[in-house]
Length: 313
Image (cartoon, rainbow, N blue to C red; front, side, top):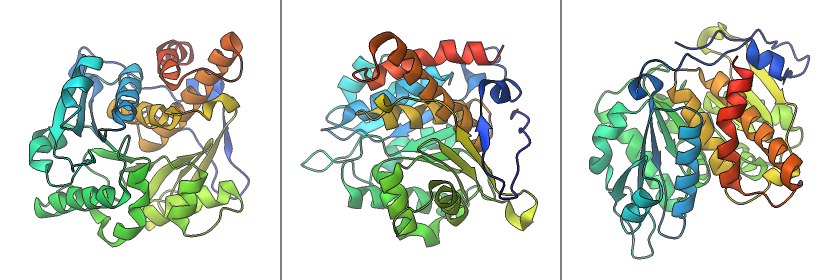
């Protein structure tokens, strides 16, 4: 069951500050009795040159409490990925001669796509054109199957190169509208908007409205208005976090944490607010022990369980 949404304002008065107090009033779903009750995450990414991104995202999803994890990666690294993260299932996807994941292997993960509670696409994809083809293939699969619409079905989280192809397939997005979560950095947000960012808060809200998606970008989380105006647009701002977050793999951890939380049964907005706060608070913890720079992205994920315990009790 999704957590009760914290009251927010859509009247232009500014974002709601995401504080520990707010999160305690917006508790995560109970863990349930077994791994199946905590949801399943499928990560699609991991080219031959960048399998670590999928590993980071998958580890973060499990650290955020997801019950099951499958990593669909380039076939030349699938075995190694499965050994590196023995808690996951590792599925081999077709790849180019250069090791980039191709879009013609979805039949290999069809059952996983059907069973997943959250699908994260992007970590470790290294070819923007092939990433776009992969998104098209995923959408065509849902359309051909008469798949769920109007916000039903698995959440779809897009990160990294998967974001770059989004503007080119906007006319095909109907099957995913209402269940998308986007995690762009500011440069990727500019690509999504087709212009430079001026005011981060209003521009992140614009991305959310354009793609009917929850968006987390640089500590700002936006949720679009619901169809028919039943829900006002909403905006949150994270109140913590160190510059040390600007390190290789940090975004993969953020996307994975959000996917893991979403798989547990949260709403998209709750997953994004909790995940973005936990990601930033993990950096605070590491900075206090190690200094503000030099901690590693994989160390961020290790901080998540203790932080969730403190906030959800």
